Image (cartoon, rainbow, N blue to C red; front, side):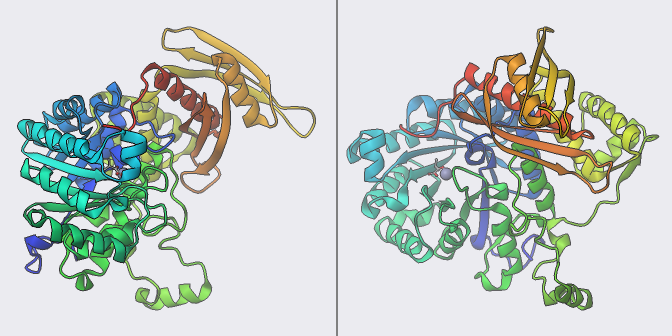
Length: 526
Ligand code: KIV
Ligand code: ZN
């Protein structure tokens, strides 16, 4: 077991720090745009999960990134809050400002070290990169005591140069050195040889925490992270559901469950993750980001603990160990008993959310109560899964307060083209009407929204699923679409899937309007 502390077998030297970057590397994924309320909600869940460090954002990237990181730094306790910064003065100062209110703030500064990045992206030589790294760490240390330094694209860099740069960073006071496999290219034994090469060339690396940050382009992020731990790394950088740039980062839940399930075989490595919070974290992140979890995903996929084949079911019923190496309750999969009905009041609703781990303030409770009543009236019984869906939908509604679907009508059938008409209210109170036909009723609705808002979206993905089973279940619609050459996602929940579809698309349009107002800087360059 890795979560039951204190455990006499747990030696502090073998404790693995979990650095969660769901809200930074994860949030950089195409189509993900979380607002501050949503980021804080995820951060609170990461605290319940027991992560050691939350990378709360890239504060220089946009005012929204700064605000989100700062709000997290103000809100959470008992965890380190990190802000990312390229190796330059403005970035480092902005990150320092964002994490200032944190109980424990960290500045995470980085610069690329591979020749390909130096030549084609930074247009700097090695001496300049070394100087920028050293200066950035020095400045960061003048702001906070806890400074992490990363060599971007380390695994495709000359090991001797990486050793020289991290040596300079350690001399200036970096407390954690992170070695990213930025493009997900390395392999476990090769990565171990690289890290051992760094220890050999830079003995001071033994005096600080070595961290690994592995991307999943070849599906090796978790294997490479584990390989790193076996040669001395004691921090892993990971994301809930393995989200992140391109194919994502190492999956937090997989790493935590490896350390738990194979505790006797990982050389004493352990961590402070409360694995029973994994399922809730996974669902929350999936719902807020719009990134669905593949059904067969390890640990959190809906089939991870399901047994379809009769022979398996028989075995599991007589002894779960026949086919299960993990117990569903260990990841928090036990079904919640919570069921509310149309006569349940505010107190009952607040208590139910508390049981689910959400502490709602008065405004949040009032908003979600109105939604709850609507659903309870239509549906009768409201389950824990419904309550979670309604709450995340409320958070999204807050993010997309600019555009509201006032009304919609549509017609269709086997004869003739479907037609739709919508009325959208903007935050200044103006009503915008649009009508269109389409290839199907959903297409017609989306085109009608485009006609109302003057947008032009191309649907890349469209998905409707039910939150719980039964014909009266709440439906969730998710869309990903391309608007002005960029990808935006939207999700919405309703008992009417057509309404959910229209609102999901409207939210994507709204996100595109907000994105063009404040363009984001992306990680890259100095
Ligand atoms: O993948 C990467 O190199 C990064 C760094 C900014 C740590 O995300
Ligand atoms: Zn990364």
